[in-house]
Length: 118
Image 1 (cartoon, one colour):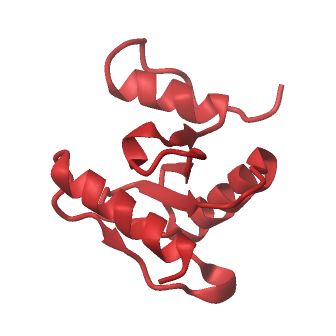
Image 2: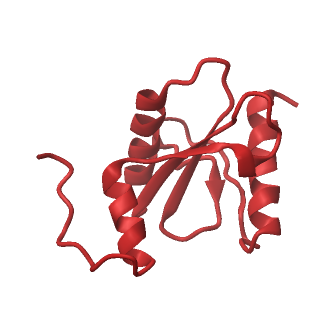
Image 3: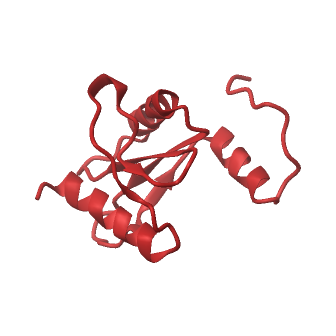
């Protein structure tokens, strides 16, 4: 099993074990890819297990896949070197995504429609 597939499978198992029973690996769709992990409505997860971490490209890929999927949020779940559990991995998102999550969880007032540019 290639390391990317193994990491995707580990994320799915972690989500399944932590209250996301419908999480599953998603089939690749080429240029219209919609992320690596499905099962959380409105959320795209791009799984990354690479020697060199490239946050900007991971977020660009998650954003393109979020748009392809019509999802509200897109994140990259990056494997942390020397750790095998997704619970120890890095979940990377934009500041705009963080504000959306904080509002949805009730930590802040629902923001006006977010602008990604300042």
